[in-house]
Image 1 (cartoon, rainbow, N blue to C red):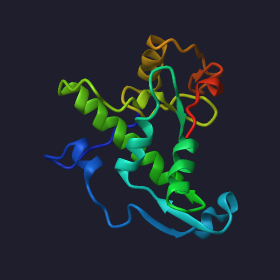
Image 2: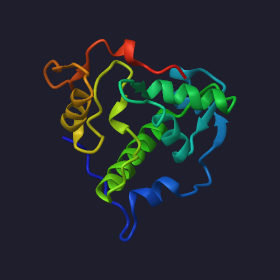
Image 3: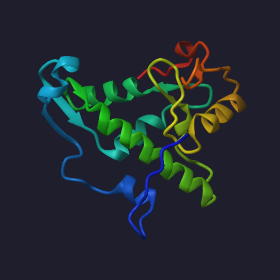
Image 4: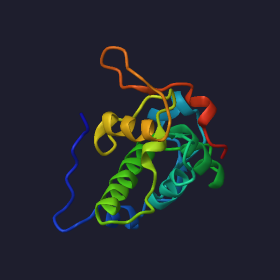
Length: 165
């Protein structure tokens, strides 16, 4: 089941995506709690529109992983890594904004359903959850494998469909 987020009254996901925030786009020291995973060095707190721009690069028949997005943004910012928590949140915001745009009748939206986890699993936090993501991917010709137990489904042979960033 997809997590439900509430927006402030009168706000849209598009506004949230385009909103400037003082920490977005900054490169900071990797926090001590993340050094076991990333080591020491510099971490990017990405901008929402930068995350959205990388997601848009996955054309029909192609996929992008969350790590690819983080790595691309870190490299562009001359940082050692991008914050996985912030990037995950921004992927969700970009997806919600795209769905909002679709509901408003826009034809060209961010293809958020082509953004998958690093192991090929689908993202339950995207609009409509993993079920909606699987449906969109199947319509584009991808084979979706059932998850084991409570695990979400995954794209079969996802590696051969990844974009080069």
